[in-house]
Length: 209
Ligand code: ADP
Ligand code: TYD
Image 1: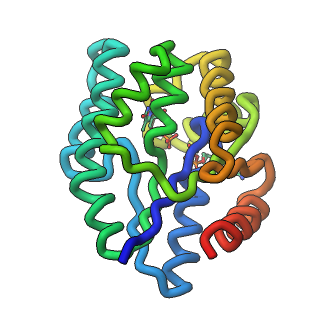
Image 2: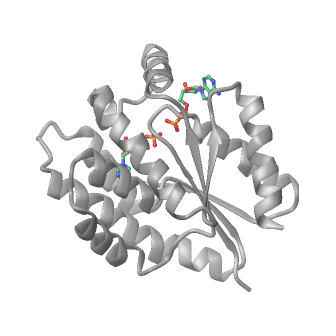
Image 3: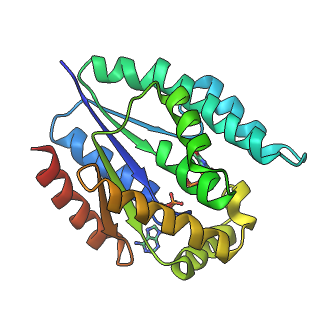
C-alpha cells in the first residue's frame, strides 16, 4: 500500500505551520495514520543540522546553505518519508523541495539547473502528491513575523532578509504553481485562521478523493 505525501509551502509568516497542525488533527480525527514533519529538522540528524544552522554565529556561505538543506532533505526522505509512505501513512511536511527552488534559487540566485540537480540528489526523485502553497503578500508576512518576534518565538535565519528577497521567493513559488497545477494548489492565506482552514479542507477533499 502506498500513502500520500502532502507538503505545505509559503514565505515565512504565511501561516502554513498553523494550518499544518490543524490538518494533522483533522486527518487524525478522520481515522488516517498521519506523520507530521518538517524541513529542516524532520530527523535526529536534521534537528542537529537545524540547530547548527540557527545557532551558528558564523556566516554560512550560500553554497553551504544549499547543501545543508539538501543533506537534511536526503536524510528526511530516506529515513522518515519513504518508510512512512511505504507503510501507507499520510505524510504532511512543513516545507520540502519547492523551498529550495524559492529560497536558494530565486532568493539566493542559484541557477535553475544547479537547483534541479541538488533537489534530485536529495529527494531521489520523490515529489509530493500534493503541495499547498499558502500565499500572502510580503507586507502581511512581515507584519506576522514582527508579531511573532514580539511574542518571543524562535528566531529564524531568514528573518533578517529584505522585502525584495521575499518578493522573489513568493514569485518563484507562484511560478512553480503555474507550471505544475496538478501538484501545487495556491491557497489565498490572507484571511483568518478559520477561513484559511476551511479552504484547505476543501482542497484536501477535492484533491485526495
Ligand atoms: P509559517 O509557518 O508560515 O512561518 P506560522 O503558522 O508560524 O507561519 O504563523 C506565523 C505567525 O502568524 C504566528 O504568530 C501565527 O500565530 C500567526 N498566524 C498564523 N495564521 C494567521 C492568520 N491567518 N492570521 C493572522 N495571524 C496568523
Ligand atoms: P523555520 O523556522 O522552519 O521557518 P518557517 O516556519 O517559516 O518555515 O525556518 C526555516 C527557514 O529555512 C525558512 O526561512 C525557509 C528556509 N529554507 C530554505 O531556505 N530552503 C529550504 O530548502 C528549506 C527547507 C527551508
